[in-house]
Length: 308
Image (cartoon, rainbow, N blue to C red; front, side, top):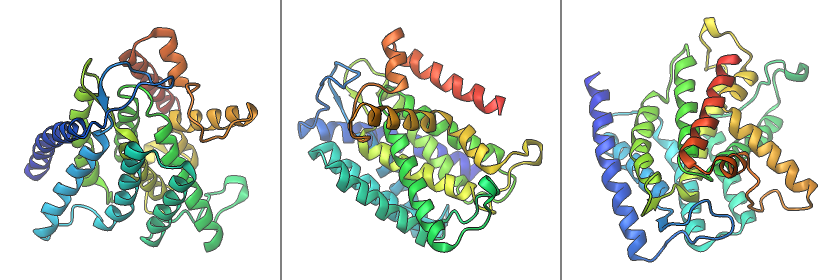
């Protein structure tokens, strides 16, 4: 218990300092998030939050690693680092979406090679076990889809943070077996909390950026693949089909990405072409308040989880 408290307090402290310092670095390099027609803000801001959070995860992990303490499977940092770097490059230089897509597939394959694989559909459409080739293709598709789903909801203050925190809380709450990501969950949530303050500031705001949304999307997809495996056992009092369970705890990103994907295709646009037709943009347009919009969407997500 004392170790967990130490991890939380040290992560909160390091995160606050690191997020602020990366923000200053971005300002010094004149790397501001330019306001355009797709922006939901009109104040000075940087997209440095994701880099700050990523650095915190690495600092905590490396510190425990050199002392020989395995908080979680550190090999996960390889694909997560790739996503963080790709997102950071996109934040600074605007990376082509096709190239970004390829790097996401590479990260997904690395996760598969680390033993994370969806090889059972648990009876969906009458399908149970999958052969390895089909399982790998399906797993890559799911991982890439989730990464982009988290990236898509990062459009207003605090929303992506809240979606990820709610998801991790539910993942940890409903598990009735050994949780290999328990320590990572504690570190991640502790690292994200200070970002709420910087995200909701009225001036000098700090956003996650693509570095943060891709990094968090990689973590969420890792959790999802594990939750669909036989190693993740849901508490007996919440006996629920695995697929329905995943949909319930990741309700909003799944609904939003499916809706926006088909809406863009119907309108003859690329599914990866950014716009302001996301559900959160429509809600924000009605009430004109980022915090209230985030609370409403998070509240609906919680209601849906309880309903399921």
